[in-house]
Length: 423
Image (cartoon, rainbow, N blue to C red):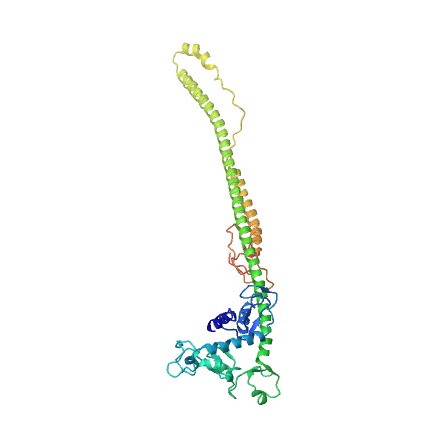
Protein backbone atom coordinates (compact mmCIF):
# COMPACT_ATOMS: atom_id res chain seq x y z
CA UNK A 1 0.00 0.00 0.00
CA UNK A 2 2.88 2.33 0.80
CA UNK A 3 4.47 1.71 -2.62
CA UNK A 4 1.16 2.47 -4.36
CA UNK A 5 0.88 5.69 -2.33
CA UNK A 6 4.29 6.97 -3.40
CA UNK A 7 3.64 6.03 -7.05
CA UNK A 8 0.29 7.88 -6.98
CA UNK A 9 1.91 10.82 -5.17
CA UNK A 10 4.35 11.31 -8.07
CA UNK A 11 1.46 11.22 -10.55
CA UNK A 12 -0.46 13.90 -8.66
CA UNK A 13 2.46 16.18 -7.83
CA UNK A 14 2.95 19.68 -9.21
CA UNK A 15 5.99 19.82 -11.50
CA UNK A 16 6.72 23.36 -10.29
CA UNK A 17 6.76 22.95 -6.47
CA UNK A 18 7.20 19.12 -6.57
CA UNK A 19 4.51 18.77 -3.88
CA UNK A 20 1.01 17.32 -4.01
CA UNK A 21 -1.35 19.43 -6.07
CA UNK A 22 -3.04 22.21 -4.12
CA UNK A 23 -6.08 23.87 -5.67
CA UNK A 24 -5.29 21.89 -8.84
CA UNK A 25 -5.95 23.44 -12.25
CA UNK A 26 -5.49 21.93 -15.69
CA UNK A 27 -4.21 23.81 -18.74
CA UNK A 28 -5.50 23.35 -22.30
CA UNK A 29 -2.56 21.07 -23.08
CA UNK A 30 -3.63 18.63 -20.30
CA UNK A 31 -0.97 19.31 -17.64
CA UNK A 32 -1.99 20.05 -14.06
CA UNK A 33 -0.43 22.44 -11.54
CA UNK A 34 -1.17 24.15 -8.27
CA UNK A 35 -3.16 27.28 -9.04
CA UNK A 36 -0.71 29.44 -7.08
CA UNK A 37 2.31 27.92 -8.86
CA UNK A 38 1.06 28.36 -12.42
CA UNK A 39 -0.34 31.83 -11.71
CA UNK A 40 3.05 32.83 -10.28
CA UNK A 41 4.82 31.58 -13.41
CA UNK A 42 2.47 33.45 -15.70
CA UNK A 43 2.78 36.62 -13.62
CA UNK A 44 6.47 36.61 -14.56
CA UNK A 45 5.52 36.10 -18.23
CA UNK A 46 3.31 39.22 -18.25
CA UNK A 47 6.25 41.39 -19.35
CA UNK A 48 6.83 39.17 -22.38
CA UNK A 49 3.07 38.85 -23.05
CA UNK A 50 3.72 35.21 -24.02
CA UNK A 51 2.31 32.44 -21.80
CA UNK A 52 3.37 28.82 -22.05
CA UNK A 53 3.04 25.49 -20.25
CA UNK A 54 6.14 24.96 -18.04
CA UNK A 55 6.14 21.23 -18.90
CA UNK A 56 5.50 20.95 -22.65
CA UNK A 57 6.18 24.64 -23.52
CA UNK A 58 2.95 24.98 -25.51
CA UNK A 59 2.21 28.69 -25.89
CA UNK A 60 -1.13 30.48 -25.61
CA UNK A 61 -2.23 33.58 -27.48
CA UNK A 62 -3.67 35.20 -24.34
CA UNK A 63 -3.38 34.40 -20.64
CA UNK A 64 -5.69 31.41 -19.97
CA UNK A 65 -8.39 31.78 -17.35
CA UNK A 66 -8.02 28.77 -15.03
CA UNK A 67 -10.65 27.19 -12.76
CA UNK A 68 -10.18 24.72 -9.95
CA UNK A 69 -10.36 21.10 -11.10
CA UNK A 70 -12.77 19.73 -8.48
CA UNK A 71 -12.44 16.10 -9.61
CA UNK A 72 -8.66 16.22 -9.42
CA UNK A 73 -8.90 17.98 -6.05
CA UNK A 74 -10.98 15.09 -4.63
CA UNK A 75 -8.46 12.55 -5.89
CA UNK A 76 -5.60 14.49 -4.27
CA UNK A 77 -7.54 14.72 -0.98
CA UNK A 78 -8.08 10.95 -0.99
CA UNK A 79 -4.41 10.49 -1.76
CA UNK A 80 -3.53 12.65 1.26
CA UNK A 81 -5.78 10.53 3.48
CA UNK A 82 -4.08 7.37 2.22
CA UNK A 83 -0.73 8.93 3.00
CA UNK A 84 -1.83 9.69 6.55
CA UNK A 85 -2.99 6.07 7.02
CA UNK A 86 0.32 4.57 5.90
CA UNK A 87 2.28 6.94 8.15
CA UNK A 88 3.65 5.38 11.36
CA UNK A 89 1.59 5.74 14.57
CA UNK A 90 4.58 7.38 16.22
CA UNK A 91 4.46 10.11 13.59
CA UNK A 92 0.67 10.50 13.88
CA UNK A 93 0.97 11.41 17.54
CA UNK A 94 4.43 12.85 17.54
CA UNK A 95 5.37 15.46 20.08
CA UNK A 96 7.09 18.61 18.82
CA UNK A 97 10.60 17.85 17.68
CA UNK A 98 10.00 14.12 16.84
CA UNK A 99 9.63 14.70 13.06
CA UNK A 100 12.93 15.80 11.56
CA UNK A 101 12.81 19.57 11.03
CA UNK A 102 15.50 22.06 10.21
CA UNK A 103 16.23 24.70 12.79
CA UNK A 104 15.49 28.26 11.78
CA UNK A 105 18.45 30.24 10.53
CA UNK A 106 18.72 34.04 10.45
CA UNK A 107 16.21 35.29 7.90
CA UNK A 108 14.01 32.16 8.07
CA UNK A 109 10.40 32.18 9.29
CA UNK A 110 10.20 30.56 12.73
CA UNK A 111 7.53 28.11 13.88
CA UNK A 112 5.10 29.80 16.31
CA UNK A 113 4.43 26.54 18.21
CA UNK A 114 7.99 25.43 18.93
CA UNK A 115 9.22 25.90 22.49
CA UNK A 116 12.89 26.62 23.04
CA UNK A 117 14.93 26.64 19.89
CA UNK A 118 12.60 27.37 16.98
CA UNK A 119 12.34 25.18 13.90
CA UNK A 120 11.99 26.57 10.40
CA UNK A 121 8.37 27.15 9.42
CA UNK A 122 7.27 25.67 6.11
CA UNK A 123 3.67 26.92 5.96
CA UNK A 124 1.61 29.78 7.33
CA UNK A 125 -2.13 29.49 8.04
CA UNK A 126 -4.27 32.48 7.12
CA UNK A 127 -7.01 31.29 9.46
CA UNK A 128 -4.83 30.58 12.49
CA UNK A 129 -2.57 33.49 11.57
CA UNK A 130 0.45 31.44 12.61
CA UNK A 131 3.39 29.68 10.96
CA UNK A 132 4.24 26.00 11.49
CA UNK A 133 7.17 23.64 11.04
CA UNK A 134 6.64 20.18 9.53
CA UNK A 135 5.86 18.63 12.93
CA UNK A 136 3.29 21.17 14.06
CA UNK A 137 1.78 21.35 10.58
CA UNK A 138 0.58 17.71 10.74
CA UNK A 139 -2.73 18.50 12.52
CA UNK A 140 -3.70 20.71 9.56
CA UNK A 141 -3.27 17.65 7.33
CA UNK A 142 -4.77 15.08 9.69
CA UNK A 143 -7.66 16.75 11.51
CA UNK A 144 -10.92 17.54 9.68
CA UNK A 145 -11.22 20.66 11.85
CA UNK A 146 -8.34 22.26 9.92
CA UNK A 147 -9.44 21.02 6.50
CA UNK A 148 -10.79 24.41 5.36
CA UNK A 149 -7.82 26.38 6.65
CA UNK A 150 -5.89 28.22 3.97
CA UNK A 151 -2.18 27.31 4.02
CA UNK A 152 0.36 29.44 2.19
CA UNK A 153 4.14 29.60 2.00
CA UNK A 154 5.69 30.60 5.31
CA UNK A 155 5.74 34.37 5.69
CA UNK A 156 6.93 36.84 8.32
CA UNK A 157 4.36 39.40 7.21
CA UNK A 158 1.25 37.75 8.63
CA UNK A 159 0.62 40.66 10.98
CA UNK A 160 0.24 42.93 7.98
CA UNK A 161 -2.76 40.80 6.96
CA UNK A 162 -4.54 41.28 10.31
CA UNK A 163 -7.01 44.09 11.01
CA UNK A 164 -5.61 46.35 13.73
CA UNK A 165 -9.14 47.05 15.06
CA UNK A 166 -10.71 43.57 15.11
CA UNK A 167 -7.69 41.22 14.89
CA UNK A 168 -9.32 39.49 11.95
CA UNK A 169 -7.89 38.52 8.58
CA UNK A 170 -7.93 41.27 5.96
CA UNK A 171 -9.94 39.69 3.18
CA UNK A 172 -12.17 42.56 2.00
CA UNK A 173 -11.20 45.64 -0.02
CA UNK A 174 -12.97 48.98 0.48
CA UNK A 175 -13.00 50.86 -2.79
CA UNK A 176 -14.39 53.95 -1.11
CA UNK A 177 -11.40 54.34 1.24
CA UNK A 178 -8.92 52.45 -0.96
CA UNK A 179 -7.77 50.05 1.78
CA UNK A 180 -7.93 46.42 2.88
CA UNK A 181 -10.35 45.63 5.74
CA UNK A 182 -11.78 42.62 7.56
CA UNK A 183 -15.39 41.44 7.32
CA UNK A 184 -16.22 43.11 10.69
CA UNK A 185 -15.11 46.47 9.31
CA UNK A 186 -17.89 46.23 6.69
CA UNK A 187 -20.41 46.35 9.54
CA UNK A 188 -18.61 49.08 11.46
CA UNK A 189 -16.46 51.90 10.13
CA UNK A 190 -16.91 50.97 6.45
CA UNK A 191 -20.62 50.26 6.59
CA UNK A 192 -22.33 51.27 3.36
CA UNK A 193 -19.04 51.61 1.48
CA UNK A 194 -18.31 50.04 -1.88
CA UNK A 195 -16.58 46.80 -0.84
CA UNK A 196 -15.48 43.68 -2.71
CA UNK A 197 -13.41 40.63 -1.87
CA UNK A 198 -9.66 41.07 -1.89
CA UNK A 199 -9.46 38.40 -4.60
CA UNK A 200 -11.87 40.27 -6.88
CA UNK A 201 -10.06 43.57 -6.35
CA UNK A 202 -6.73 41.85 -6.98
CA UNK A 203 -8.11 40.64 -10.30
CA UNK A 204 -9.12 44.18 -11.27
CA UNK A 205 -5.85 45.70 -10.09
CA UNK A 206 -3.96 42.94 -11.87
CA UNK A 207 -5.64 44.02 -15.10
CA UNK A 208 -4.48 47.58 -14.48
CA UNK A 209 -0.97 46.35 -13.76
CA UNK A 210 -0.98 44.35 -16.98
CA UNK A 211 -2.23 47.40 -18.85
CA UNK A 212 0.54 49.50 -17.35
CA UNK A 213 3.03 46.77 -18.18
CA UNK A 214 1.83 46.76 -21.77
CA UNK A 215 2.18 50.55 -21.93
CA UNK A 216 5.60 50.34 -20.32
CA UNK A 217 6.64 47.62 -22.76
CA UNK A 218 5.37 49.71 -25.66
CA UNK A 219 7.27 52.71 -24.30
CA UNK A 220 10.41 50.60 -23.99
CA UNK A 221 10.04 49.41 -27.57
CA UNK A 222 9.55 53.00 -28.76
CA UNK A 223 12.60 54.18 -26.85
CA UNK A 224 14.67 51.25 -28.13
CA UNK A 225 13.60 52.12 -31.68
CA UNK A 226 14.57 55.75 -31.07
CA UNK A 227 17.91 54.63 -29.62
CA UNK A 228 18.55 52.45 -32.67
CA UNK A 229 17.66 55.30 -35.04
CA UNK A 230 19.85 57.69 -33.05
CA UNK A 231 22.78 55.25 -33.11
CA UNK A 232 22.34 54.86 -36.87
CA UNK A 233 22.24 58.64 -37.27
CA UNK A 234 25.41 59.00 -35.17
CA UNK A 235 27.20 56.32 -37.22
CA UNK A 236 26.05 57.95 -40.45
CA UNK A 237 27.22 61.36 -39.22
CA UNK A 238 30.61 59.94 -38.23
CA UNK A 239 31.03 58.35 -41.65
CA UNK A 240 29.95 61.56 -43.38
CA UNK A 241 32.29 63.67 -41.21
CA UNK A 242 35.21 61.35 -41.94
CA UNK A 243 34.46 61.49 -45.67
CA UNK A 244 34.28 65.31 -45.50
CA UNK A 245 37.59 65.44 -43.61
CA UNK A 246 39.25 63.12 -46.14
CA UNK A 247 37.89 65.09 -49.11
CA UNK A 248 38.84 68.47 -47.63
CA UNK A 249 42.32 67.18 -46.82
CA UNK A 250 42.69 65.90 -50.37
CA UNK A 251 41.38 69.14 -51.89
CA UNK A 252 43.53 71.38 -49.69
CA UNK A 253 46.56 69.21 -50.45
CA UNK A 254 45.88 69.58 -54.17
CA UNK A 255 45.36 73.31 -53.68
CA UNK A 256 48.68 73.63 -51.83
CA UNK A 257 50.42 71.63 -54.56
CA UNK A 258 48.83 73.84 -57.21
CA UNK A 259 49.99 77.00 -55.43
CA UNK A 260 53.47 75.55 -55.01
CA UNK A 261 53.51 74.64 -58.70
CA UNK A 262 52.47 78.18 -59.66
CA UNK A 263 55.09 79.53 -57.27
CA UNK A 264 57.73 77.40 -58.94
CA UNK A 265 56.60 78.54 -62.40
CA UNK A 266 56.73 82.23 -61.40
CA UNK A 267 60.15 81.76 -59.81
CA UNK A 268 61.49 79.98 -62.91
CA UNK A 269 60.01 82.66 -65.15
CA UNK A 270 61.67 85.45 -63.13
CA UNK A 271 65.01 83.63 -63.20
CA UNK A 272 64.74 82.98 -66.95
CA UNK A 273 63.95 86.63 -67.66
CA UNK A 274 66.79 87.70 -65.39
CA UNK A 275 69.19 85.38 -67.18
CA UNK A 276 68.14 86.54 -70.65
CA UNK A 277 68.39 90.24 -69.84
CA UNK A 278 71.68 89.90 -67.98
CA UNK A 279 73.14 87.83 -70.83
CA UNK A 280 72.16 90.45 -73.40
CA UNK A 281 73.51 93.31 -71.27
CA UNK A 282 76.76 91.47 -70.55
CA UNK A 283 77.27 90.82 -74.32
CA UNK A 284 76.88 94.50 -75.04
CA UNK A 285 79.08 95.38 -72.07
CA UNK A 286 81.84 93.13 -73.44
CA UNK A 287 81.71 94.86 -76.83
CA UNK A 288 81.86 98.27 -75.18
CA UNK A 289 84.86 97.20 -73.11
CA UNK A 290 86.75 96.06 -76.25
CA UNK A 291 85.93 99.31 -78.03
CA UNK A 292 87.08 101.39 -75.05
CA UNK A 293 90.34 99.42 -74.95
CA UNK A 294 90.88 100.05 -78.67
CA UNK A 295 90.20 103.75 -78.26
CA UNK A 296 92.57 104.00 -75.28
CA UNK A 297 95.29 102.35 -77.35
CA UNK A 298 94.67 104.76 -80.27
CA UNK A 299 94.68 107.71 -77.85
CA UNK A 300 98.04 106.65 -76.37
CA UNK A 301 99.58 106.37 -79.85
CA UNK A 302 98.34 109.83 -80.81
CA UNK A 303 99.64 111.23 -77.53
CA UNK A 304 103.06 109.80 -78.30
CA UNK A 305 102.92 111.07 -81.94
CA UNK A 306 102.07 114.59 -80.80
CA UNK A 307 105.39 114.77 -78.95
CA UNK A 308 107.55 113.99 -82.08
CA UNK A 309 110.35 116.61 -82.27
CA UNK A 310 111.45 116.05 -85.86
CA UNK A 311 109.20 118.09 -88.10
CA UNK A 312 109.90 116.02 -91.21
CA UNK A 313 109.14 112.77 -89.40
CA UNK A 314 105.98 114.29 -87.89
CA UNK A 315 104.72 115.34 -91.32
CA UNK A 316 105.59 111.99 -92.90
CA UNK A 317 103.62 110.07 -90.21
CA UNK A 318 100.79 112.53 -89.93
CA UNK A 319 98.77 110.71 -92.59
CA UNK A 320 98.70 107.54 -90.48
CA UNK A 321 97.34 109.38 -87.45
CA UNK A 322 95.02 111.80 -89.16
CA UNK A 323 92.43 109.12 -89.99
CA UNK A 324 89.73 108.94 -87.20
CA UNK A 325 89.31 105.58 -85.52
CA UNK A 326 86.71 103.25 -86.99
CA UNK A 327 83.82 102.79 -84.48
CA UNK A 328 81.53 99.83 -85.03
CA UNK A 329 77.85 100.55 -84.96
CA UNK A 330 76.10 99.10 -81.87
CA UNK A 331 72.51 97.86 -81.83
CA UNK A 332 70.01 100.64 -81.43
CA UNK A 333 69.02 100.30 -77.77
CA UNK A 334 67.71 102.61 -75.11
CA UNK A 335 68.90 101.99 -71.59
CA UNK A 336 66.01 101.53 -69.14
CA UNK A 337 67.21 103.18 -65.95
CA UNK A 338 64.24 101.97 -63.87
CA UNK A 339 64.55 98.34 -64.84
CA UNK A 340 63.41 96.11 -61.88
CA UNK A 341 60.83 93.48 -60.82
CA UNK A 342 58.81 95.70 -58.47
CA UNK A 343 55.73 95.40 -60.65
CA UNK A 344 56.05 91.62 -60.42
CA UNK A 345 56.26 91.85 -56.64
CA UNK A 346 53.18 94.04 -56.58
CA UNK A 347 51.31 91.57 -58.79
CA UNK A 348 52.21 88.66 -56.50
CA UNK A 349 51.21 90.68 -53.44
CA UNK A 350 47.92 91.58 -55.09
CA UNK A 351 47.35 87.89 -55.87
CA UNK A 352 47.98 87.08 -52.19
CA UNK A 353 45.43 89.66 -51.05
CA UNK A 354 42.84 88.44 -53.53
CA UNK A 355 43.35 84.81 -52.49
CA UNK A 356 43.13 85.70 -48.79
CA UNK A 357 39.99 87.72 -49.38
CA UNK A 358 38.37 84.97 -51.43
CA UNK A 359 39.45 82.23 -49.02
CA UNK A 360 38.13 84.26 -46.08
CA UNK A 361 34.70 84.63 -47.68
CA UNK A 362 34.53 80.99 -48.71
CA UNK A 363 35.76 79.87 -45.26
CA UNK A 364 32.83 81.72 -43.64
CA UNK A 365 30.45 79.90 -46.00
CA UNK A 366 32.08 76.55 -45.22
CA UNK A 367 31.95 77.24 -41.48
CA UNK A 368 28.25 78.14 -41.75
CA UNK A 369 27.56 74.89 -43.60
CA UNK A 370 29.50 72.89 -40.99
CA UNK A 371 27.59 74.46 -38.10
CA UNK A 372 24.29 73.74 -39.88
CA UNK A 373 24.83 69.97 -39.58
CA UNK A 374 22.74 68.68 -36.63
CA UNK A 375 21.58 65.20 -35.64
CA UNK A 376 18.85 66.55 -33.35
CA UNK A 377 16.57 69.42 -34.28
CA UNK A 378 14.81 71.17 -31.40
CA UNK A 379 12.10 73.81 -31.47
CA UNK A 380 13.52 75.34 -28.30
CA UNK A 381 16.68 77.51 -28.46
CA UNK A 382 19.60 75.29 -27.64
CA UNK A 383 22.73 76.12 -25.69
CA UNK A 384 25.34 77.42 -28.10
CA UNK A 385 28.22 75.00 -28.45
CA UNK A 386 31.47 76.72 -29.53
CA UNK A 387 32.87 75.54 -32.85
CA UNK A 388 36.64 75.74 -33.44
CA UNK A 389 37.43 78.83 -35.52
CA UNK A 390 39.39 78.65 -38.73
CA UNK A 391 42.43 80.90 -38.35
CA UNK A 392 42.06 82.73 -41.64
CA UNK A 393 42.67 86.38 -42.58
CA UNK A 394 39.85 88.70 -41.60
CA UNK A 395 37.80 90.07 -44.46
CA UNK A 396 38.13 93.87 -44.11
CA UNK A 397 35.49 96.19 -45.48
CA UNK A 398 35.93 99.89 -44.68
CA UNK A 399 37.23 99.50 -41.11
CA UNK A 400 34.94 96.52 -40.52
CA UNK A 401 35.51 92.79 -40.49
CA UNK A 402 33.32 89.76 -40.18
CA UNK A 403 32.78 87.61 -37.11
CA UNK A 404 34.02 84.09 -37.82
CA UNK A 405 31.07 82.51 -35.96
CA UNK A 406 28.02 84.43 -37.22
CA UNK A 407 29.38 86.54 -40.16
CA UNK A 408 28.22 89.76 -38.47
CA UNK A 409 30.35 92.85 -39.32
CA UNK A 410 32.29 94.24 -36.35
CA UNK A 411 33.39 97.85 -35.78
CA UNK A 412 37.09 97.70 -34.84
CA UNK A 413 36.38 95.32 -31.97
CA UNK A 414 37.29 91.72 -31.17
CA UNK A 415 33.94 91.11 -29.39
CA UNK A 416 30.80 90.21 -31.36
CA UNK A 417 27.62 91.45 -29.68
CA UNK A 418 25.49 89.32 -31.99
CA UNK A 419 26.78 85.88 -30.90
CA UNK A 420 28.87 86.82 -27.85
CA UNK A 421 32.18 85.42 -29.10
CA UNK A 422 35.69 86.87 -29.08
CA UNK A 423 37.60 86.91 -32.36
